[in-house]
Length: 484
Image 1 (cartoon, helix red, strand yellow):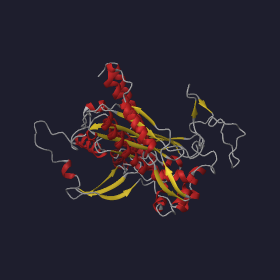
Image 2 (cartoon, rainbow, N blue to C red; image 1 turned 90 degrees about the vertical axis):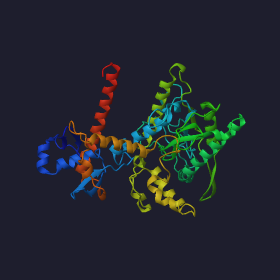
Image 3 (cartoon, one colour; image 1 turned 180 degrees about the horizontal axis):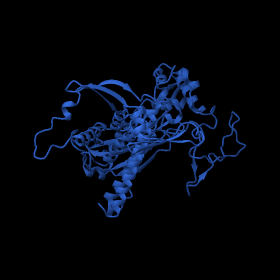
Image 4 (cartoon, rainbow, N blue to C red; image 1 turned 90 degrees about the horizontal axis):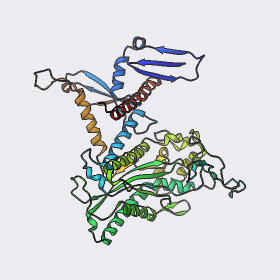
């Protein structure tokens, strides 16, 4: 049955199973309220939570002794868990990244845009051929995945090539051409030790910057490296890192970042980042002995603002920062749900029953195998992340603002909007909502009562996001036309 529900001008249009005879049902708010007397109160609480897909239910007692219950956001970054909260998390990530590139807001000076900085991507090495999207470097046209001779075979008698031009939504993308040739042990060990490999990269980069400063006759301690990085799981389910790396002057930790007094340019910083990425090594123990982990050769480092027009440097730098911030914010909402795995921990006994492809199932099996090694017992508890145990987003302390600060600003804005205006001529402080707010909250539940409530919440969140996009486009058009 196809149903369209209109609640307080929030249309919901979803298909429940297969359509039965093309029947279309319209349900009015009055009918729903008569069938469910507490609907309006529930809907108001849901709207206050931002139409969260997995809300927290919090109970408390007001100042006058009355019990009250509210819905709070789950604040989950994964779009598969809650589209509303993940969109908010992505927006906060954009603000955090962009503030550290362009400056001028969130308490950061506009002079940050003049600091030497680069945008770097550090990838994992190849563990074997996988199905991938391939494009012609000249024209950008799609081309066959692995256009080898059809007669070429690996030692397992499987084709070493793939003549298919894959669609971006092809489910075979990321899967190994020959699973028996693919190095799943190296794949799993790289994923598990990727956080340590990144840590060694940052140490190596700082040392290279200090060495370069000493070589050109500058104080090695006069410049500090700041960065923000976001981790993305590629289609082959291995992590790689996107990062903005910036040079700041070494000042008091409580002071705002200042431009470094150095001759180092963004181009030289790019070379140092690439050199650090290619020189980092990490020896770990595998089932068959010692394995040396490193980043892949496809390291990409681009100076930010290197091709700016001198006449319009500020505007172009801001545009570049916007694009980089949007690129990083796009990845923070991704999760292993794209591979068919839930967001919660799973047991190794459930591997064979998971709705995943053969590539992901082999990764999970190898994780269990490697977890039997002396120093890798904890790996089995990270099956739900395919063996990655690090943070998706991290930054140095002084790169930019913090997620907590952004949350505080948004909460202050919300409270200001909810604060009732005092009557004209009355300058006394209001003794309304503040006195009724509970002083302590207690956890009373999690999620929605049934699939119907969750459907309404997700549909309303989608409609809310659509309305924001429409409003943004209208504001942009009004600005172009010179209208207020």
